[in-house]
Length: 273
Image 1 (cartoon, rainbow, N blue to C red):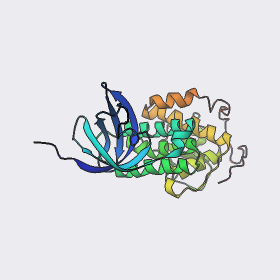
Image 2 (tube, rainbow, N blue to C red):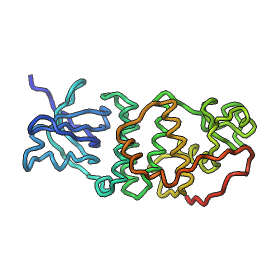
Image 3 (cartoon, one colour):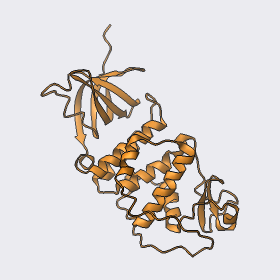
Image 4 (tube, rainbow, N blue to C red):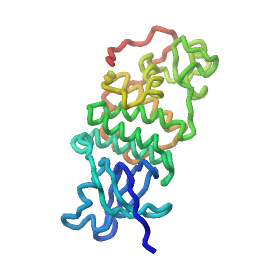
């Protein structure tokens, strides 16, 4: 009996050669989560599927969706190619990293409609000109619970206060206020603006961000802290992240985070939002 084809909506997040004339196309779908489809004849000249399966294409497709193994892509009904990842190497690198990180958090075939929508909003944000590094920070923070890490970013993890200067403590599992800084000599010594953005990013809806500008010092602190959290508690380091690191974008801005023992002693910055 022939397998029935179904309609699905998805974002192409990767494509690779498979056999002589075929290719594998990986989607983050609205209905089925991540699924990998074989696209037969995709590498042949003038293949109809070639232009509608480029990475970071959003569309309505028809295919045979199998619960395990490779599914089969038949055709596309309507597609939209996001411009920024195709025209800018930095946007492309961060978009690839973001979808790789989401894929590491969820097994193939698990429906994750929230993260499908979030991924679509990331691509729409890139096309609006939002900073790709900032979008990556937002995803990294919001994905932590999916990796089994749920840092306390709302109040002090020790006393529950939310009205005092904060710093991040891996030992405490989140933010600690200045009344407890002496209890963790290895806290991150992060600036007040960095802590503000960590808290904000944990709850922000990317679809509602029209613009956001963060100075290089704060961006470098965010990168340093999130890299440390992922290294120490998550262990996820996609190959696409290695490429971003190899670009050296952060090397020019990175400075070790200075000790901060008293409220109000941080260097000021001029972030505009």
